[in-house]
Amino acid sequence: MITFLHDKLKSLLLILLGVVGISFIFFGNWTPHGGDPASAQVGRIAGRKLTLNDFIAAQRLTLLDMTLQTGRLPAAEQGAFINLQTWLRLLQLQAANAARLETQPEQLVEAIKENPLFRKDGSYDPELFQKFSTNFLSPQGFSGDRFHQAVADQVRIRRLLDTLASTAILLPNEAENRMQRLFGPVEAQMIRWDASKITPPEPSQADLESFFKVNEAEFAVAPRRTVDVVEITAAGNTEEAKKQAGETAFAFTSQFFNLPEGKPRPDFAAAAAAAKLTMRTVGPFTPKDNPFPGEIDPRLVQAAFSLTSSDPVSDFLASKNGYLILHLREEQPGRNRPLPEITQEVRARWQDQARLQLLAQQAKNFTDRANAALAAGQKWEDVVRAFGLTAEKIPVFTPADDKPLAFPDADRIRPAVTQLETNRVGGFSRTTNGGFLIYLAKRDPAPATLSSTTLPKISAQLLNQRRGQIVRDWLTGSASLPGNELPQEVIYQLRGSL
Image (cartoon, rainbow, N blue to C red; front, side, top):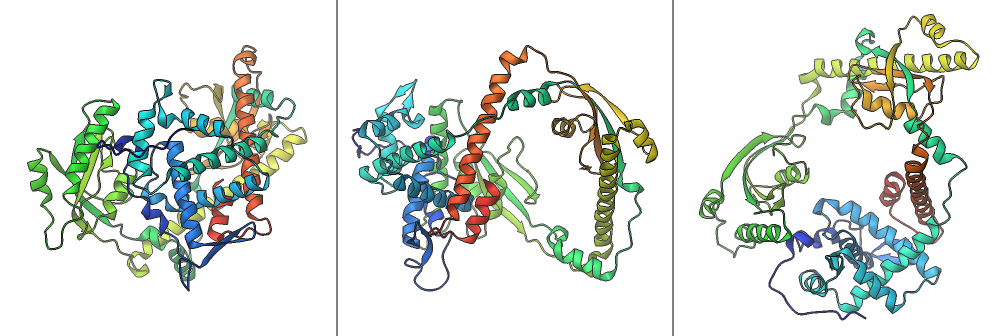
């Protein structure tokens, strides 16, 4: 078996592992109410009581498992996701134990050697494993035996899930039908509904108060932040360049944290100037804004709003070109506005919503009656004329064709027609100023050449979806088995997110 290595190395595996040392964030996110938190029951698995200490131990192994799979630690704001994954892992391990699935030493060795985290240039690299041991396992307190057990559990869980998924099948002609719906050219027509032509009712004071109470947060003045930003840019796209940038960022931010008692925090601008870093100011901005040009990671804005006057400097945050460090310059708190201050704004929003509701009702009434008339043999043109509406023809297109389509709402029409049968009207789709309905007049056969090139891919995709659904259904059912007691919020997540 591969020897567990404890030799200390000086280099930090910053890019490979992300920011090491945040795992403690997840362990205290969920504490039961009352009594000694460490010994309080948080749930049951197969009838066995699970204390908070048990859950924290399981959570640590889940964190290790996720790191082995992704090559980095989960972000701090993923606490709820870590909790969910921990419960799922407990359910999976319980089932693997019940099935008496075992792992042989050679399977364990193979799993380690095949992990992309420990491979370089297509083959296993012992040095990468040694770095992982030194920079992650040892600081996190994982012994060699515990690491090997985590890998063995990973292998057993994979065997369990693969066995469950192996029961997946495709129905006759299922892939062929999907290919026709995706690649068969279609002729369709659209009816647009304009909300501005709907006269909404006048809300009562009770209507306004109820609407405001439910949507009070939407009328609030959003908090704002202004931050100073410095960027440490990687010298290139290589792992070595990113690593060096990470080490520089780590060194720069370290001076702002873990200060000895009585020592003041260094001035951010002066520290940036001393490090020959260009500082720029961004803001003010709200949590919904993206004030960082070229960046798409929402965690940058989240980090900005986590800064406080007592903790004004962020950790180094991955950016497109390297790492950003943020410093809080100014914070403007948000506030809820009282109804008397914004009555007209609330009234306008209430009426906008009422228009859309009335519009959706009218569209549904038309859809139901039109589909009944079409099924009875009436022509589409006659049905549209009877309702006093106008339908516009959409240029012939193929739903799965990736070339841009010139007509409005094309990206919403593509999936809509794939769900429709010929000579039927689809459901109402809302837009910013109303909505539309789609009528599918004709679907031509997909090109015959796709049978050999695209059909196998569609079959594989459908089969993978079916396998995933089997596993999701099994997990949801397992959580409800007698002897399993999971927190209610986890049950909701399980049913809603899987």
